[in-house]
Amino acid sequence: MEFGLLLPAGQAQLEAGGTPRALVALAREAERLGFASIWAGDSLSRPRIEPLTLLTAVAQATERVTVGTAVLLPAHRNPVQTAMTLASVDLISEGRLAVGVGAGFPGFSEREFELAGVDFRTRFSHLDDVVALWRELWTGQPGSFHGKVLHYDWLPQAVRPARPGGPPIWLGGATPAALRRTALHYDGWLPYPPDPADYASGLQAIRAATDRPVTPSLFLTVYVDPDPRRGLRVLEDYAQGNYGRPLAQIRTIQATVTGPVSEVAETVRRYAAAGAEHVLLRVGSLEPGAVERQLPLLAEVIAGERKPVGAAT
Image 1 (cartoon, rainbow, N blue to C red):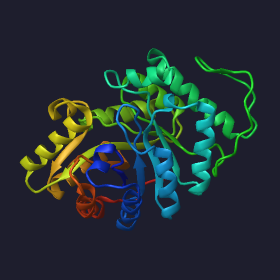
Image 2 (cartoon, one colour):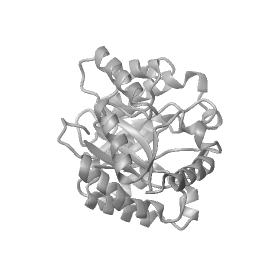
Image 3 (cartoon, one colour):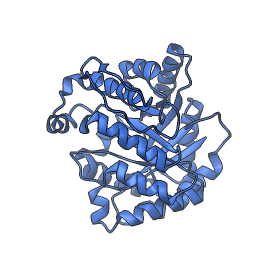
Image 4 (cartoon, rainbow, N blue to C red):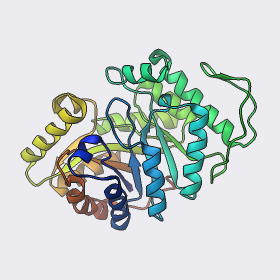
């Protein structure tokens, strides 16, 4: 099993004393401690360091880790320009980029899509079209492109990524439609179902629908604390600060765990038994320096749970 770390790049963390340079230093330390990947999130509704810019800096400062988006919302950007940016990051990282993508979430993302000029009702078709367009551009010899919602009679020649075909693209989401689309179009699966049984059934559905290799990954919000009650208070503050919603509601949507190292490790084992091979850890705290303090504790989880697996990113 491999583990990734989501960088705390939101405005709330920066206002609590973080800096972009500190984020890069955090990525270097995570690499030293054995993390396999470093990730950055994306949003227009919640201010944060732009993920592709941040990952470019991380790629230059690290040597081994995969750098990835968790998740990029392609609707926010011109798709042709984004293909060129992603190819550039892949070249700078020497082929270490993984692109997690999503189509937004009802009740959270409508205003973002309106701001970007993309119809929220067509968000899934738009996302699939964008990914297909990226791959066409990454061939280096694009022609025209006509998808369900995107249509281009002319496409410019684009820089080719480090890897033939471009970086792997992972889809976030666990609805039946998302599972079908993962099987058909994507290289990895990055959901956050609260119940490992739902993860197992989702992965089974993907594998039943395709013979292609699909990396099974998990997005897990975590706060390690020997006092679970204190950990729950920290997660509650994070849920309210990050989403404006109570933790009880967020936990019905997202995989979340708090407790001592042993309890976090047991939760990871349950998802590993369900088929997860790459666990992306997000520290659920807005406290100053929280991720830095949590990092050695998460390294204990990694040391105890890492197992040899097949090729991932």
